[in-house]
Image (cartoon, rainbow over all chains, first blue to last red):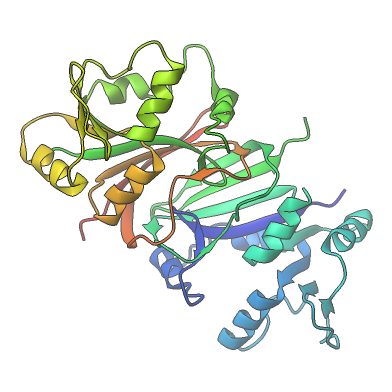
Length: 176
Length: 176
């Protein structure tokens, strides 16, 4: 069965953005020629799930949506016409993921944000977690993991550190 | 100068205890003959700082205080007579750490809990962080890092993974 993978970067203190949706801390590990395995990962992906807030942020900051070649679902409460491969999904996120997983295909990539991650985690729907830890304290902002989710076992698949100080941890949801 | 080191375990989602001060998740990585470097670390320590709440928890769960051979400061608002090497400190934690760092000695170990960590981080007083990440989601509870602290750069000193799935990350506060 296809897997739903969360692939995301966080500060050591667990934030995916500083106050004001500031992602400046990611710049600390920018290095020419080093993509931390992103190209390999995205090559296995054919479907993307993104929260509406994150999508809006991206569309304000880049000239075009970076996953325009993939089947993309923007999770939102506001119905909107599809734009090419981009669909605006107002239904239940659990149903969406179940339908997608039942279909043949490659990896489903959850590209954030925190609210979508929370909804997916609350329903136990994320299979793999690739978390890149940036060597910095952000201090405040939007947390990767909100309070009040179910617990659950994980299996460490790999831990890789880079000379910029980034550590990439890969966990799978434990089926045991 | 002596260093103040935070040496602590957390879940992947950033909790040091589940609701009800439950530390049961630490059991997941218990393995005979594997102490994850703790003996080496504690051998370099001669002074311990612990929050009162954590101290009370420990005293309810173990027959005797495990750092009784070290100069220990329990951070509390309630004055209390010292017990052997254990002093109950009601003053400013920043002053305490400055005094301790100015003295000759070995590593100062902050053994939690979250409130003392928060006070120390808010004042930029922790020099080294040894964070052991347990491969589990706890889902809710007491967070290692509270919101509303100053940010700051870190340097990755080492990242080590164990066959139990524990990953131990060692960071130093960046002086640059």
